[in-house]
Length: 449
Image (cartoon, rainbow, N blue to C red):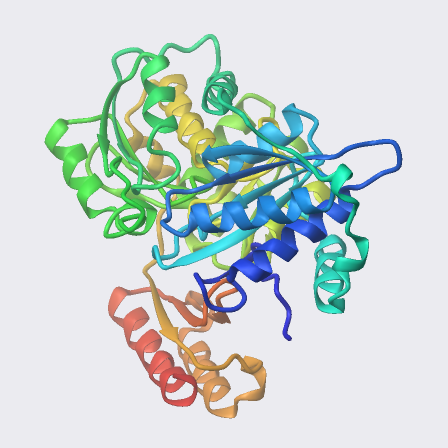
């Protein structure tokens, strides 16, 4: 058996290894086992997004937890960062989210938080894998009198909504602002409209009718066309598109322009610097961030560092550097002053706060950063050998890099959550960028697809 955990938990097609109910039961058992302490009955929270397979995996994980003599608390449908908050707030021993984030509905996944609301360390993930692959969890079974119990947390959404509202500055009043929300038919479909409405915004909601199969389907953070059109139609102040589990967001400004994570990171970093709250004058971003962000931070005299792709790596670097803000161009931003993990709703609220603080439309705030022409091509692959070991791909990359010089860059990497290779090229012109990107993608496709 190969490694179970990718860059963000376990993920795959539902009912195919590793996302089978058998694995889910044993993951529940392993987490329960690691949570046990003498004289203490652990409690583990479980939440999920709106996928059809969510009920199946939730039942399996709960069965595993209770079979090890540990209590399970079912939260139901809630965004991933909501579980991180509740786990910490309720002093639970761990929190589990059943979600495949922005992936299509046939996929599902398992994300795990420790009692402090942070995602598990590599060491903890390795311990879980060791327990699973040793195949001896049955030897640790308690007696029938020691089984765990299942309870349900009925006020989970309300608690999380109150937490989110508290992250919006109390001295600002967004009353009357018109906001369009694309809930991706996912985990934010109830929470997001409630938060903005309770703050006094006029809210128009799109894609808030989940049926288990329509999560992320031509909507959400990866498909913002409908949101942009509605923002223009409604003459709204801003629009926000969440992904399936609500840990990332993409914004649309008042002129219908798309603002990815890099631009939101720049906008919020400027505000923090102005307010002398940008700790150590430092921001963490990833290798996928746009060259325009590098230029913007240089002009703003803000220090930054690149982390590998994945919010856990961004967080690690933030903690090591003492930074309070960091994120990915995908819209996964972390505000450590507010939360332990990326939260699309908190990001949206901070962008909204920036509009009010500066008293400027979002389209004007976005001018803090010019976006370099960029193209990203995703290629489905059958295998994932190290890119550096494939001469044809390396030759194509080198040729593009030599042509671009210091006016662009090339990044070729595998997805940590899907069987996919991502080819990203930035350059001085759209035509040049697309030409180099397509040439490299053609080689990748020929060798690996």
